[in-house]
Length: 130
Image (cartoon, rainbow, N blue to C red; front, side, top):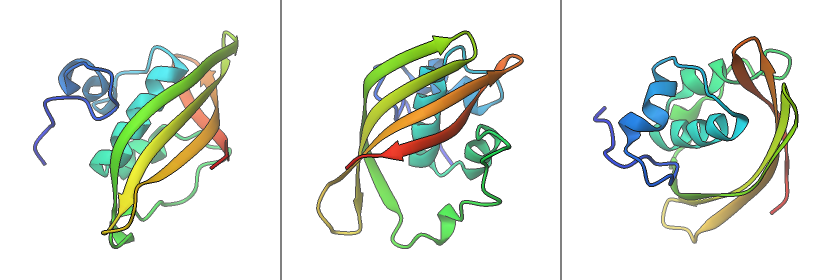
């Protein structure tokens, strides 16, 4: 897979300066950075990263992204709110746009909960609001 020049998360940074290092193993500095990197991982089909960045208490055994046919195409991420609760817990509310096949544009709105353990942030769970 060829790395994208622009980061899929919409940060206006190059992938190599934004989500690329996180996908390569660097810890995310904030829950918002982890959220952006997870969006980019969905856009790029990086299932191992998505599972590794999911908190073990809520992580599914697999996501089976390769079996989703047609696969969703991700068209944009907008962070609506980043709310740190304390040093180790935060919420990120976002809207992600996507299309499946030739269908119309869809939006996923989620309030996601993140927890930091040691030096790493993890996605815990989210509540969808479409």
